[in-house]
Structures are given as structure tokens and as C-alpha cells.
Image 1 (cartoon, rainbow, N blue to C red):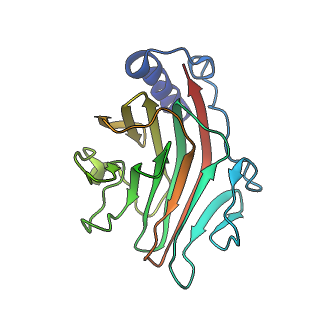
Image 2 (image 1 turned 135 degrees about the horizontal axis):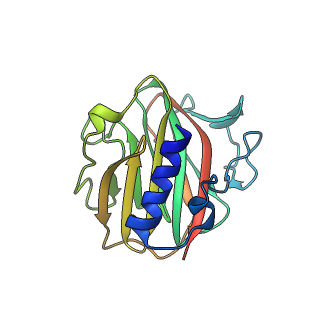
Length: 203
């Protein structure tokens, strides 16, 4: 597993972004964005009942009214690598990773509009799912932890699921800089857990 992670980072470094990333090149982990203990570094919503840290994982659970919630990084990013592990919990999971704003995201779980799993596919506000990630049905582990890696460089998004490249997409509406967010979609009774959340800035 460790060697495959190094191989992925090397591939990203040499083939996908063409940028220098010292920690990746040396086989080291990306910088941690979640300490496994509390929500330091994240913008905690007021009256937070959704996001809890449990046994080193960050778990999002819907409230009785199912209003949903987004959890944003305090820092803003332009070009970056984002990596996390996620695991589906109870209910129909509809989640995702927001890329610099709330209008563009990489889906995790069931699309509320299309009613099927579109994990690793980009959802763009006003356009929906204009492209879909490839080979997800063979890679996704519904009952176990999955690794999601996103490289956002300019308008380009490249996505890996469990160390396999599944998507390359250019978004005409991508913003230049902003925070990264995790989504607990409104309207669903669900839970999802994240761990080993890591983010590295790129040139």
C-alpha cells in the first residue's frame, strides 16, 4: 500500500501537473489537514451537530431535520493536491469535496439528481455531471475505506480513486482560489467518515 501511494504521487508529479512537490518526490506524506483529534484548521459551523471527531476519523451525520452542512478549510488554495480516505456510513450517502467554492465539487456517493453512484465525478453548478469518472464500479469499496486524490491545477481537475486514475476534466467556470470543503448533503438521512485528510499547495 505504501509503495502504491508513492507511485501515485510520483505519477502526479511527473505526468499530471508538471510541478515541483518535494514531499511527494521524496516519498513522504502530503501535509496533514486534519489532526484526528479536533477541527483545528476548519471553519466549524455555528451550532455544529453534524461534524464530530471519533477515534481519529471525522464523521458527518445528518440532523433530524436533514438540513445538511458543509465544512470548509480555514485556508484558501489555488493549485493543490487533496487526498483523503472516506467510508460510507448509514443511509443514502450523498457527499463530496468542494473545490475552491460551493459551485464545483467532486462527488462522493449517490447523486441526488441521477439516483446512482457518481463517486469521483465532477458536479458543476448549472451543468450537472457533464462527464463521469471511469471504472468506479470496479474500484469502489462500499463497505471499506477508499482513497480519493484530487489534483486541481488552474481549470483542470484530475481524480484518482484507490490509486487509479479515473477522471481528467477542464472546468470553464473554475475559480482561481478558495477554500476546500466537505459536504453533508441536505435532504438525506446519512453518515460518512473521513480520515487522513491531506492537502499540499502547488505552484
